[in-house]
Image 1 (tube, helix red, strand yellow):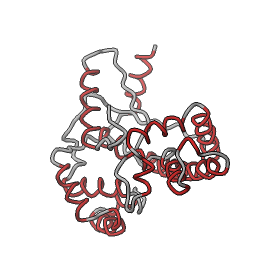
Image 2 (cartoon, rainbow, N blue to C red):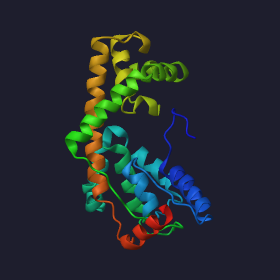
Image 3 (cartoon, rainbow, N blue to C red):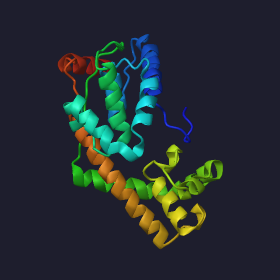
Image 4 (tube, one colour):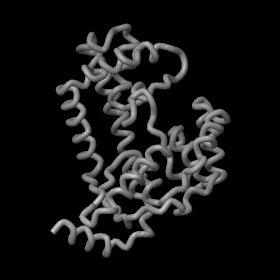
Length: 245
C-alpha cells in the first residue's frame, strides 16, 4: 500500500505488479486482469520495460527540468523521441519525464519479461457517455463521504495549508483530480473543508469535472495506441474463454 502523501513511483509499481504476476503464474487457474490506470504504468508492464537504475536518472531529470520548465523537457523529448512525444500531453510533467527516462535508458527492450502473454481490450462508450458516467460517479462520491475523506486527509497532512504556500505542493493528495479542487477552493476562500457549501461546492465540483473529463480524453487516446504486437490475440482469447468455462 502507498500512503496518499507520496506518489507510487513507476519503478515501485512495476516491481509490485511483476511480483504479483509471478505469484499468480504458479497457479494453473490464474487469470490476472490489469485494469485501467495511468497509461505509462500499464505499458511498462505490458512491454516489459527494464526500470533498473532509472530512479537516479529521473531525479537528475527533475533537477534539470523542474515543473516550471515542463516545456523545455517536452522539447527535449520531441527531439530525442518524436513518437513518444506525440503520445503525451505537452503539459503532463510526470509522463514527459517518464518518457525521457525510457528513451535515455532504452527501456522498451522487453528485458523484464512477464510470465503471461497479454491481450489488450478496451471498453469505450464514447465521449458523451463517458463524461456522463464520470459526473454520476463524482456526485455519488460526494454523497458517500468524499468531503469527509478529504477533511481527514487534511487533518493528517495539512493539505489546505500546503495549498496556500507558494510553489507546487508535494503531497500527491493535493494533485489528485477530485481532491485538489476542493482543497484549492478551501485554500482560496480561507475555509476548512467541512465549511465548504453552496457556491464553494459548485465551483469545486465544476472544476473537478473539467479536469477529470480532460484526463479521460488523454487516457482514451493513450490506450488506443498501446502496442499489442507481441500478443497472439486469437490464442489469448481462446485461453481466456477456456479458463472462464
